[in-house]
Length: 154
Image 1 (tube, rainbow, N blue to C red):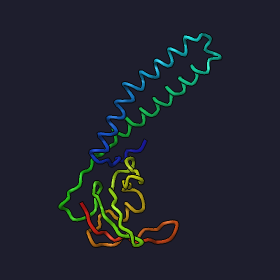
Image 2 (cartoon, one colour):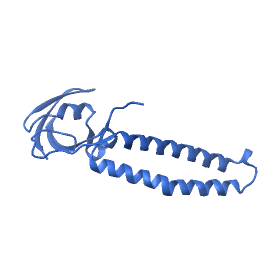
Image 3 (tube, rainbow, N blue to C red):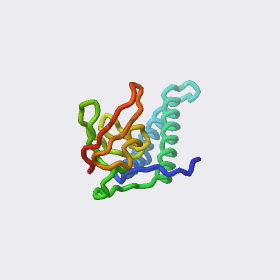
């Protein structure tokens, strides 16, 4: 297993902790109830409901293990709004292709492009990191090179 730290914002870390707690306490209990109910049908060798519940339990345990490992390797990063350059946790207003858009630079596991959260490991995230307001960043995309001008950083 890689010893590389996983960068997360404080909010992302807390969200992951809450989800893990939910999975361990509530979801495990729900699946245990499903197993118990399915087992009450009798012959387990031909019981599809029981097999489905066992698969769901296995999937859940795998997810819990991965989340625990992720939290163990997590490095909470905070950004200094006075620093004047793009960091993990920064909200960045950029202009490209004649449009303006706001991105929040987050750790890789927190990315949600539809919510404007882009990973610090993505091509755009990497290109913006460390740049000050007014700087331009070149990003290679499948449609060709794009230039992102940094308008604001917060």
